[in-house]
Image 1 (tube, helix red, strand yellow):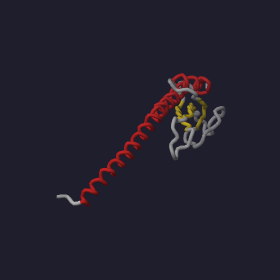
Image 2 (spheres, one colour):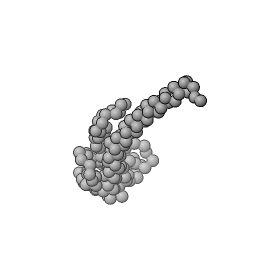
Image 3 (cartoon, helix red, strand yellow):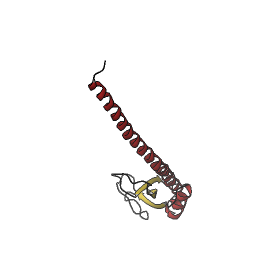
Image 4 (cartoon, one colour):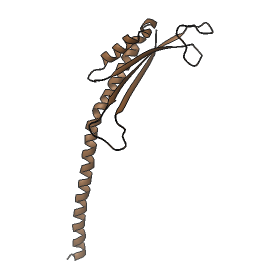
Length: 151
């Protein structure tokens, strides 16, 4: 035979299970909505990276292509599919072998060695999520950079 105390405790446990389930389901729905909201952002980051790489590959074909900033930007933007409002910036820089830092591409190296010419492309996109999450700054600016040495 059960006492009144045992009966009262069992009733409290049922109520606490209901509260736990309500909190758990709320948290799971919040996480699911966050995954749905941020999923496209991660896809677009891959697209940004692919576009930056495509522009750098174009620039790495020759030193003339590395100097063609507009061509590198066009290649980067043409390779980014399904993402709107993307910007691309392209540049060329030079280094001398064994010397740290960049140099002007119109001058020669001090030791007479040939310059190493690099093509650099940066793609940028701004993401504004549908929902506002605590401790996350808005809007979120994504940027990817690719650098390749010209042949």
